[in-house]
Length: 209
Image 1 (cartoon, rainbow, N blue to C red):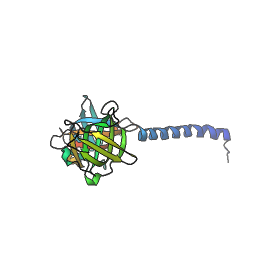
Image 2 (image 1 turned 135 degrees about the vertical axis):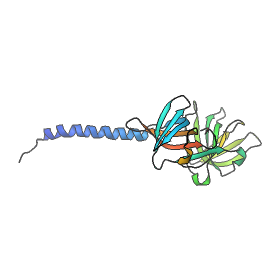
Image 3 (image 1 turned 90 degrees about the vertical axis):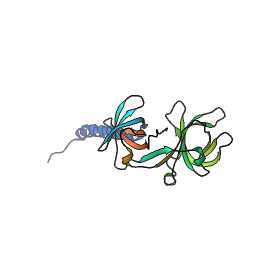
């Protein structure tokens, strides 16, 4: 029976520990890395791979998982937004501390709570996304909405020309060539993209998010 010295064991174990730490670090990076926003037009969808021609002229392949959430996007009006509606809005800050909407999307009751909170967004410098419950709506005097979320609230001014859309639960039947999509994806270890969720326009609607 042969005995292995402690120094030999350390020489074997150290590279294994380092490799394990690297793999763990890669997995953590994949999970924690900022999601990649993809906005554009579907050119093809086959199997679990969505091909998108982006607004900035790139052609990207995005993988879907079996349970990737898909949302349909249709046109809406500000008069559809009521107190207690659950909405989201991309916006930019104003000098008085309020926000000016870049778009507003209205969730159905079944999607209440989706992405609740206030966080940075990627529709321009200092843009943010706020998802929450409408506290009050003033349409006749400045089109102002108060959006409440856990831990805070924001007052949002909605200009006349800002797009307003409804979101609804959807499925893969929306992912047809020519449809406009907004999706956020994470990068896998091999550099490929996997969608976290997809918003797809219905009847030619261009998701403004």
